[in-house]
Amino acid sequence: DTEVTQTPKHLVMGMTNKKSLKCEQHMGHRAMYWYKQKAKKPPELMFVYSYEKLSINESVPSRFSPECPNSSLLNLHLHALQPEDSALYLCASSQEQGDGNEKLFFGSGTQLSVL
Amino acid sequence: AQSVTQLGSHVSVSEGALVLLRCNYSSSVPPYLFWYVQYPNQGLQLLLKYTTGATLVKGINGFEAEFKKSETSFHLTKPSAHMSDAAEYFCAVSSGQGGKLIFGQGTELSVKP
Image 1 (cartoon, each protein chain N blue to C red):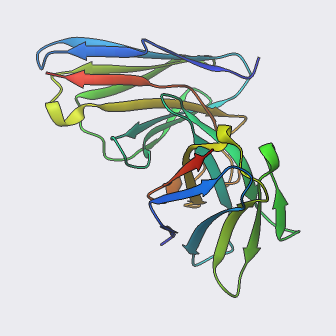
Image 2 (cartoon, chains in turn purple, red; image 1 turned 45 degrees about the horizontal axis):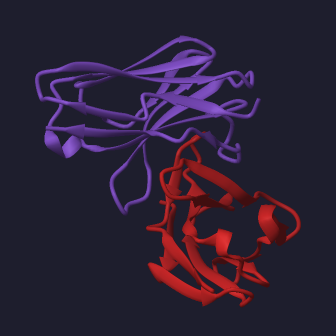
């Protein structure tokens, strides 16, 4: 199984809602990532977890709250988002968080619309 | 700081023609370089990567790239385009922090029948 599975595929939420994005992998990878991709733009790193511990937080606003409950799961909790947060949210994993040459496996993403 | 520049936001080729997607990088240290492909409504998939060693890197789906230090380039080529190659292609360089990739702006490849 070389898949990274993200749910839901699409999400529409209001600015006062609380929702969560989920990501799952069963490749035994110990590093997991959240990337954000605006339309027609490249992905931008948000968070990195290594061995279930937060390793990198790219100064993401606190309305985005990541969680890694175990080595297979990664969540992104959303609260009080703004319309400009509408984007494709991509989860990825790699065997380990190495020195930068690791191969990332990406999920298909959650397309988020904030109204 | 590391960066990449992809020349051409859109490239169009005929089926069977050579594909050439250009990428130039800037890095203060020997770089790790990657090409990823993104099909519509999909995540990214690694085509190939350069770490050290052989400068000609072969990837999946018939793609290859050559690392040229003197030109700070890592262009992606495929001898014969197929309709299924139509997608967005991203060149990326590692920031030095594990998992943090610096992506270029992307090149959309169209393949005409």
